[in-house]
Structure formats: structure tokens, C-alpha cells
Length: 494
Image (cartoon, rainbow, N blue to C red; front, side, top):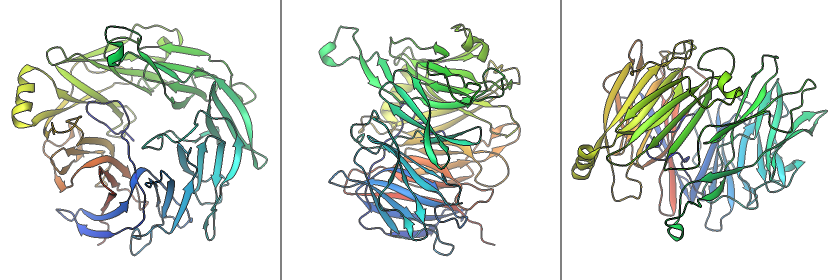
């Protein structure tokens, strides 16, 4: 799901531990949601959902840390009458180097298991009649790139993806990734993809002031699967903020060890904030690239959006087929099919940056948040101007290092069950506002629902009851010894 942070391309970080819990259920402002709050001692660093006991209800796994830096997995099984119990039914201690975690029914028994990746490789916590195994089973031993736990987070990258109806585990190792698949009841090596995890950044520390040395970071790629050659087999696309690497699938179901294509679209210079998404925007069955770059300061901010079709990626052409330019704004990008008609929409969420708007920000602590919707036709051509513009007032907090830290938005789910994706927006002033999706204009002009909700750190749409309405999980910011999540559950009674 898309999680948009206005001025940062980094994923939000969440940290915590459950030593005690308390549950409160209240009605939201118009009884559209029931609200359940669960408090934790410690810090929350991630949350996952799955059906662990096979009863058809979605359960929660909350990943926390304590003051000893132990990583714990807190299992909350959903009950028919009490929603989620205030106390975890089971707590598993993860290894200190666990950095990836996914809920996945690997043995196809109708119950989701827990698969993790740490410094030893791929591990499985299997769910049985009395709960999860207390100790994991090592499925595949590899020397991964994880020597220890990443502070304050569990990486959002999935552990297992389905390729041609078979589960394939992607294990990051020092020289690329080791791919394992299930065969004859065991995980066996499928391929080894060779590439570098390094990402050169143009940032400079104070000690390097005046130099262009930059520094090297490690970054796991986003993984996409698509038939890029028309041979009926899924190829592997790996995407970083500056490049795409493609590994083709072979006739025997394996993958090329050396990259088939390496397309670099972002130079390692300047102060750009770059985002990249792979999506089939021209509906030819192959993945294309949309790249968004924001740069400049108060008087020179600009956001450029470039479109690279699949043919240009394969020919390594850096000339985009289409481009958009948004002056005086720093924006983030969402690619979504708002009306579910098969054609994607490009949604730009932007904060206006300019001399006058900056003065207004400093005086009022408020600014305008813009939503721009560009439909893309079936030839992959975006409109030169947005079809829909919405302007929402949001509140900044200049006491924080990031004044936009309280602002979040998501446009990926349908909360009222009308078949249109709805827009949810945390305005930085303690309110969560819902804008219904609609025909022609995509989004209503004014919020149809506002819910009082302070300090959201992460907005996580999820379907907890298996119907046509989405629910919402909010992880709140915490600076003290306790943390909390809020569940907004769409009312379905009556």
C-alpha cells in the first residue's frame, strides 16, 4: 500500500513491546467506524496481518522491541465477539538480526505461518493447533547481509513471492539475492542473482563540506514480476531509487544469474528526491517506469515526472516518452487505479514551496496540500494538466526536525463499499479526514468524515473482516515508554 510522507522518500519507522495492554472501543464521529485502541509498553517496529488459525478472520502480528533490544512478535487472534483481545495470546522472541518478516501459508494448510530472514537465512515459525512453534525451523541457510537488527524497524520488503504459482523466497546476500523455492517438501535453491546492493548518495557530511565524495548506502530493491519478453514467463524486475535491473526467466524455470538489463535513470548528483514506480501504464502487458524528481529550495522548487515505456527501458534510452513539470512544489507520487477500470491514475501529492507560501507557513503554521490527478490513457499518455485538483489545509509543526511529520495520506482502499477508492488524510492537527471516491471527479470536494486522531506515524489500510469494506490501522508516534495502535473498524451491524 502506498504510504506518503510529504518531504521524505524514506519509509516510516515504527518501534515497540507489549508488556501490558489496554483496549478501548468507542464510536467514531458519525458511527461509521468503531474504534479500538491497544496500548503497549515499549516500541512498535512493524505490524503484519494473516489468518493464523484458519478461521477466516484476519489476525494481527505486532512486532515490538523492549529496553533490552529484544525483538518480539505479539500474536493477536481476532475473535468474533471481542474483536482483538487486549493481551497477546502468544509472544515469540525473534532473533536479534531478524529484519524481514512475512505471514505466508507456505505448507498450504489454510493457516498462515511466519517466515523471517535474519543473519542465518530463511526461517519458519509454523502454526499448529496450540499456536506457533516457540523456536523457528531453518528452511535455507545463507550468509545474509544482516549482521544485526536494523534499529527501529522491520523492513517492509516481502520474503516470499509467488512465481508461476510456486512460492519463491528472496534472500539478500552480499553479492545479490539467493532464490529458493519449495520442491519435494523442502526449500531448494532456484537461482542466484548477482548485483550490488550499494546506492551512491550525493549527500555530504560537514567533514566533507566542499567535496563531491558523497557516500555509499545499502538498499534492498523493490521486487516486481512481469513477462517482459512475451514468452509467457515472469521475469524479475528489481527497482532502486536510481536504477532498474531485470533478470530473465529461463526455459527450465530458473533465472539468469547475471542481469539481462540494467537501466539507470537517476544520476548520483544534485539534491534530488527521487521516487520510481514500475507499472504497466500503456496496458501492453509489460512494466513501464514512472520517475518523480523533486529538487530546489524556497525560490526554485520543481517536481519533474518522466515516463519511460518498456521499449525504452530495454533499449536503455534515457529520453522519456512523456514528461510533466510541476513548478513551485515538492511532491510525492502515487500510482493507483482509483475507479478500478484497469487504467492507472497518476496522483501527485504536493506541498507548495515559494516565498509567499513559506512566509505564510512560518506565520500560521499552516500550508496547502495539493492533490493532483492525472488520468493515463491506454496508450500510456498522461494529461498535460491534472483533470482534478484538490486543495487541503494542513498544519505544520516547526518544533520538529520534520515539520510535516504529522501529515500522512493514502488512496488505496474503499471504506464505504461503493466500489471507489477513498482518500484518507492526516492533516497534522489531530484529525483524520476521509474523502469519498466518486465518478468523473475521482474525489469529493470536502471531507465527508473527520475523526479526531492525534500523532499518526503510519496509516495502514487493511481488510479485517473479509467483506467489501476496508478498515484502518494507525500506529502512533511515541517518544516515551509506551506505544499504541488505533484500529478503525467499519461498522457492519444492522
